[in-house]
Length: 440
Length: 155
Image 1 (cartoon, each protein chain N blue to C red):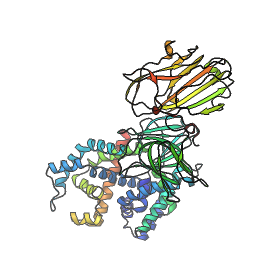
Image 2: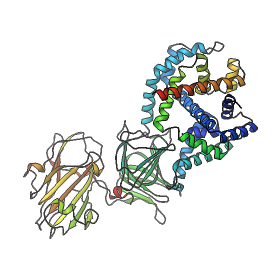
Image 3: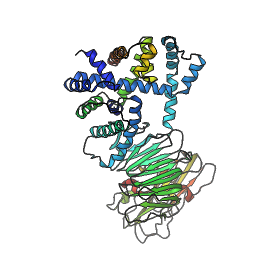
Image 4: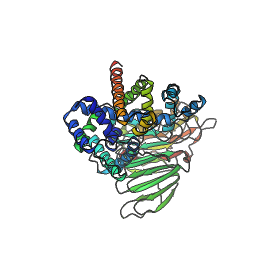
């Protein structure tokens, strides 16, 4: 059988018009001939690519307008080549524009990678594994999986929506024409979602639940048969897929689906307007490194609480160390300045995004300032540019060597065009330890 | 290239496009059952094959298809044809090669793949037999493949 005949048979098979007997023969030929198998694969790829090229050209109204403006309707009866050449020219001229248009349309519903921590992140696209890199545009069908020490930030080009994928988590981007749709396969996602069109809300599915988001700040944790939704701000419709029951979860409340747990609204103990404060007692000496090099740091603090101010009580009856961790969100875009004060030693770090790994030292103290803000110049940070609506990781460490009487320790800021002040609690939320641990 | 793999089974480019979306949803739905110790591509192709065959049955369009073992070999062949970047480059090269076809052949490609016309419709429109069209398209695909190979080797 000649190669030509094989080629025609492949086309007929792919057209569904090859008789059964010849299909069986083709099957045998393909099994026996690696070259024919390769030819078939290349033909398949060509067909799919040609179809894609045609689809992308059809998707562009610009091409149609150009064709109309050239007054080149298809005239039945004329040789088809008469209108082909101008058509090709128009299409070729529009290719760059089409690609741009399709990219814009694409990026409005699919996110891109803004930043990530760790190297154990897998992106499965089609049947391939794609290396993760900053600015990588994701596509419907992509499945992202993070390892035990990884985290990932996804953002959108045209809106301030940010998704933080926790460690040991997997998400899938679902194909959808009606808004951004995801499935949390396992693990945890935390999100700040810009207002979405009501007809096209963001949708997060898990095995057990469906969360519909119009615009809010929330986190969702899921496994095969459990899910928990925490809403820091805004409103999310949360549905149990097993019972069909729907809950409207509002600010500082949460709900969970789990065996034996009632599906109901509950108040968060650590909602918006508080900071995670961890305290270690009995840590000797006066340096920050005495705290950070302690065997109890960071995993075993003596206390964890959620105060509503960025302050650390250091008048414990003995030496102590304190860590404050929060996400900061500023009211207006501009340059902000920070101060830190405390007893003996203190360090203030600020991230360029939500990830602790992005944090850098911006102010410090290695002598007792006892609640004063201007005793040493290094207590004060440079003016730092912030973008309104974004979240930034903030961490403050305090170390006190000896028992002190009512030593004041804390952090204040100076917003653009304003005086130094306590940071209002509405601009911060507590760091969530489950981001580091992957799940609750 | 999972979409090409789906096309090998359903043999209708529009149906392959729709089925590919179903495959993605099914992969996501079946994710908990995926044993992470196993290789992903064969598992994904298995899901795609199951979905595509179900679509064929649902559409009452089930002409005899290739053996599943052979389909798996073709899936492997498709996977070995390059990563996403290489496949995009191949598509771009194909677009360039289209311009080198004669006007008559470009029109045939447009009708079949851009306008999604059947061989019979095209045959009626241009006054040729369906058999002659298969011969013509076979030559077109071979010419395009030759052009792609030459350009990609010289790039």
